[in-house]
Amino acid sequence: MLRFAVASLLFRKIQYTKNAYYSGVMRQIATEEAVVPSKSLNARIPAYKKVFASGEIQKTYQSFVGVVQDLRTEFKKAYKGKYSVANVLHGYIDFTYFYLQNDYLKKHRLKLAIVFNHQEVCFELWLLGQTKDVQVNFWEMLKGEKWVNEDSMPEWSIFETVMIASPDFDDIEQLSESIHSTFTRFPNEIFEVLEAYE
Image 1 (cartoon, helix red, strand yellow):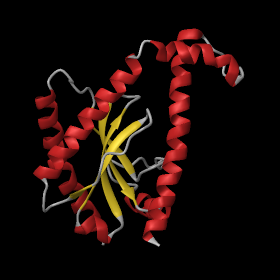
Image 2 (image 1 turned 180 degrees about the vertical axis):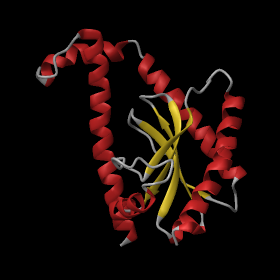
Image 3 (image 1 turned 135 degrees about the vertical axis):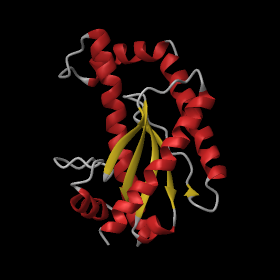
Image 4 (image 1 turned 120 degrees about the vertical axis):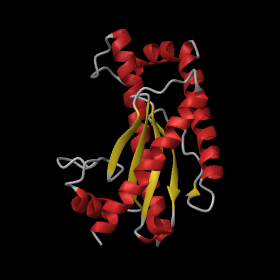
């Protein structure tokens, strides 16, 4: 049952990321070419090709994914015994991320995710439920907390908070240290809050 729920959530994520990928590329094309969104897909192809022609988008995307993969390897070593660290999920141009889970999170059907947001070019920490119902329940419960948007629940998480707003990719070592430092603080605060609601 749990596998089905996770597979269902991943399927919805894939559908969402396909749409987000297409939307992101089309926004860039629209900016450069002043493409009117009502044009047919065939009419947009020349601008689409132009965006990809230089290869810069592909190279930059692959570099960002590489940074997240290295970060995941570091997290797996640094938090061995404390968290299980899943593989990096990527392939689309909106988010690249990996999950972390410990016994407490597993018991409550929750996961933490270190997320690289490609559109904002920042690192975020997300709290996710294994199913949409779990996410809605925890979002309703945590609405008054500082990380949680009271007005609307994010599409794929209970909350999303920025860890590093302006990452310096020219100093990867410092960037990695900053992400680890920020991550060390957040879960303890989150767990304290969650435990207060039990």
